[in-house]
Image 1 (cartoon, rainbow, N blue to C red):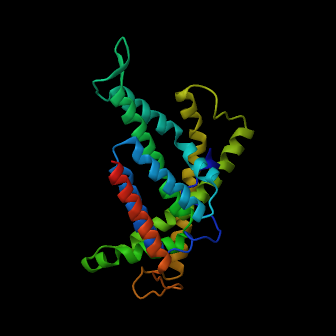
Image 2: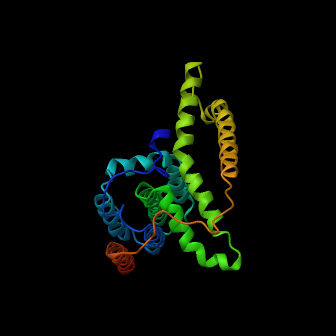
Image 3: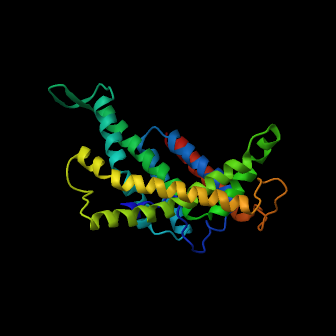
Length: 264
């Protein structure tokens, strides 16, 4: 399960999407997420799915990788689906038994909200898979730089997000090693009911948190040893410039928004 998490990982290939400016990718990802919530009809999911498939093709990303990133969310997806299915009021009753009532509106709402969750995770995964953490930090900092004039810590916020994304694969690898070590000592993480499985996670979570705090301390000490004092006066190795490909990507995303609005 831990190996299925793709959020925060970078897929190093050459592609149209990889070459885009990180600022453009961040803004277009936000626009894509807004488009996901604009459509109220299930037919609005069609252009979104086509857009995701086209983006994956232009980014040279395997579809299996995007689907693998959704796998860890299956419990949340099931919970979201069931919650909307049974607790959404409606007039068209499909199934009624005792106090359980399933309506057509509830079924449509369950499918719609589950698809939205899948689309949001997929969009965020494409962003991190096609953008290096350093480039993502530079792009986010440049986008937030106008707020620095009013005292907003743009550089610090971008740095914290970059470090968090950078350490996701590291912590997943550490968790996998700890899990295998505990299983070699007889730990069972898969059998039993929900409460028993939650208790079995304690031997995994405690050393994982200890390792995370230790890494955070080492990183803070390394930054202090190198006299790190924020972003003021610092230069960048790569200068960000918007190009023709960014304009084409923006036009494609705007076309997606227009299609979702027209379909409704």
